[in-house]
Amino acid sequence: MKLPIFMDNHSTTPVDPRVLEEMLPYFTSKFGNAASRSHQFGWEAEEAVDHARERIAALIGAKDTKEIVLTSGATESDNLAIKGVAEYCREKGNHIVTTVTEHKAVLDTCKRLEKQGFEVTYLGVAKDGRVDPDDVKKAIGERTILVSVMLANNEIGAVQPIEEIGRITRERGVLLHSDAVQGVGKVPFDVQKMNIDLASLTAHKMYGPKGVGALYVRRSRPRVRLVAQMDGGGHERGMRSGTLAVPLVVGFGKAAEIMTREGAVESARLVGLRERLRERIMGQLDEVYVNGSMEHRLPGNLNLSFNFVEGEGLMMAIKDVAVSSGSACTSASLEPSYVLRALGVGDELAHSSIRFGLGRFNTQEEVDYVADLVVAKVSRLRELSPLWEMHKEGIDLKSVAWVAH
Amino acid sequence: MAYSTKVIEHYENPRNVGTLDKSDPNVGTGLVGAPACGDVMRLQIRVNEQGVIEDAKFKTFGCGSAIASSSLATEWIKGKTIDEAEGIKNSQIVDELNLPPVKIHCSVLAEDAIKSAIADYRKKRVDRATVSGANKE
Image (tube, rainbow over all chains, first blue to last red; front, top):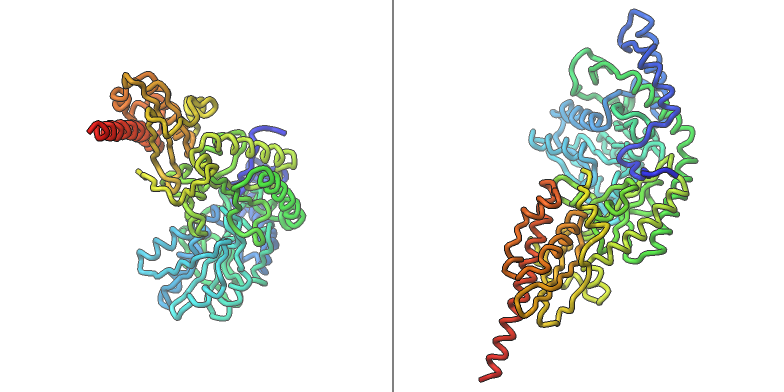
């Protein structure tokens, strides 16, 4: 077992050696521009890109490789989907429905559109982090052009009821976009079954390289049209100009192929590891709370709040283990996690939260080591904590008149 | 954002973690911050007849920089008079621990904690003096 241990697979994942191997030739010998129509270097690159498109399409149930628009990553895909549709449909309507727990790439894009005169409804979520499909139904109006709901949340792992939402949007004739970054390959996701019209994907959350992603854009029933956000040579059927990063695209394709083949078995293994981590920690400590739905959850995600201990302090204490926290101290803005806030977790427990993200390369040995380390460090930090002492004395912390600064 | 070695040092070997008896007339207790803010510091001092802080203890709910700031504060005030301790500025803590801009508020809270403990001690003395003054009448 090597230190440091990486348990932050929701922030990024290591590139699978099989993916790296497949990418390398496209840096050195097969380095052509996929848009060069007139020579072998170009044809070779184009073929590799098409092959990757097939693999990505297969992963999400897309019928046609023409529906896979390659981008620099999911942030760009989110921007393209939301701005692209908004601009195209401006005459038809100006209302977008989304949720408060979306990734910033979606939320910030919506904020920009609001400044340009669009109206956005940000639906709240329940304590388990899931949005109610009924709320989506009620929010859709005459002027609604797009609903955007993520497949699974990066912080708390909550999996959204996309299939039910897809039924509603299809019935009402409104486009459905889903940021599927965290969930693809790990939980069921099928653009046909779920009536999805646009989906954002990225390679680096599925053991592929950083710097490449895709936007699924449905071509039939309905045919989705959007306004390109990157103008230039007309690549990707005019939807996204710019020379393709062929080696990265090839890597993305290979990562997708592995996910299609191994995803289900891997997810089962990760659930087992995650439960082992959870039980081992919660069996040895009290006042520990799980954030987000246990039932509808990403296999490798465990988000825990350790009451009376602050998240960044705990991360420093377990410095040979890479995890993340919803604490304000870990954000540049000193605001605690907006996702935890949306769950109604309360600032205090938000400051005490740690997110564990297990992945393909984590082992049982690592899980046991980390669980025991966390228990030891939490216990130690509780010895340093005035709140723990007050709790032990039976003082209700909510009744104290704090002198905040 | 790597942690400064000094901050890690204070976390690994914190000075003066603990609790003094709140009801002791020579003990001043400062409690600043709020759980909702992610930062709570409790700093206590025991002051002798000469006005010198002979013992100081702290407990902190907060990040590594907050723990280090309060640990350092207790180290510095021991052996000082309460007037001298009151003069400690957060900027001195920032310099000593190499705190980055985003962590400066931790040092401010530590300075507040010192002042809060001293204020509590002074108030107790005034209350005692008032009581004994009243008893004399």
